[in-house]
Amino acid sequence: LLPPTRCDVPLAAAGKPQALGESLFNELFGANELKQYVFGDSMPNRVVKIGERWSFKKEGASPAAGTVTVDMHFNFKNWEQYGGHQCAHVEMAGDLSTKNISTATGAAISIEKARISGEFWLDPQLGMVLETDSDQNITMKVVTQARALTTQLSQKTRLTCVDMQ
Image 1 (cartoon, rainbow, N blue to C red):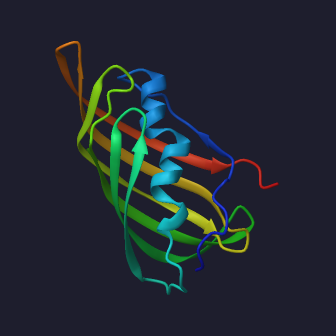
Image 2: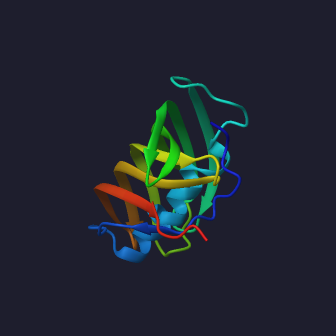
């Protein structure tokens, strides 16, 4: 298993956000944001053996939630044929949290508790993730105009590479 050489894979997201409105939800947990949190530099820069585990921690800016911290753990499960490609099957699990909360959207949004788990299939020859299946369970607090709302978001997401050109 080698790290992907590019992470600009075209992705399609399936599922509908339920609670805070589609645009706010996508700013926090859309395909590009999840790709940024989970892939890119999260892959180890070395050869990894089947059964090996590694961790990754990163902070990144989110227009909706300020600074988001991602703490992920990965397990190289095995090699599998996937969509005609020999892929590394990797399991993942981790947490998200916020600090330095942003009010750029007109609301103060903090992630009280967030857990992501799932798996993905990486083709190291292409340097691309071909598919990711994940579950997100997130408790958020939104404060706007002196009103506070705590909401629980649960979703299953499948991100699939739709074009490899």
